[in-house]
Amino acid sequence: MPVHQLLPKLRSHFDALQDRLTCFCKYGCQLEGWFKGELLTVLDAALQAGTIVDLDRELATSGGRIDLRVTMPGENPSWIELKHWLIGMQRGTRYGAGFYFGDQTSVGITKDVTKLTGGERAASGYVLVLLTANPGNDEWFRGVEKFNRKFSPLRIESISSPSDFPSAYFLGLLCVA
Image 1 (cartoon, rainbow, N blue to C red):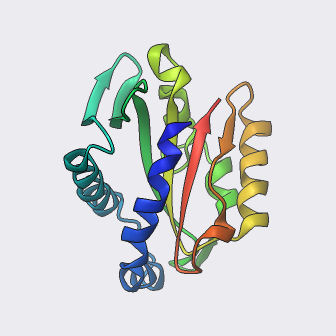
Image 2: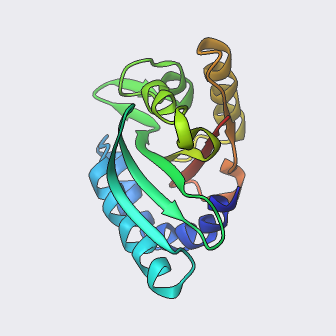
Image 3: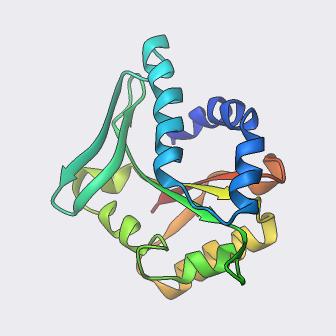
């Protein structure tokens, strides 16, 4: 799964932005457009450096628009859907990873995973979730299990682990199986 090789670059970039991520959590904001903009900044630098060889966004497919397509040298393209989840309080309600994994609306990832299961995307589909704040390993992996149980035959596997990230955020990379 070569796309996971980008995680150290992404972590380095987002580590420097923890003040913003903490602020987003404090005010209960989910800013997926901001997240996509930051990713494009990192991925464009990787494209210029030759770490990736192709980058495109908002690609129309038969299953719907997919946020990103990234191609690493010598690899098939990776198709990536993006999400930003608030972990904590928002307008008096606490949201955790389990809520999002179990939600079948556009707040959750069911529709994203479904888009990534068709055609050429099936072998290289990912969902990259920015979580502000870090939910911790137990909550994250229970959420993955909840998704797999509730939405079978759809299946995801976590490539990254909350224990490898600071408390302000987590970049959850999920492979669509």
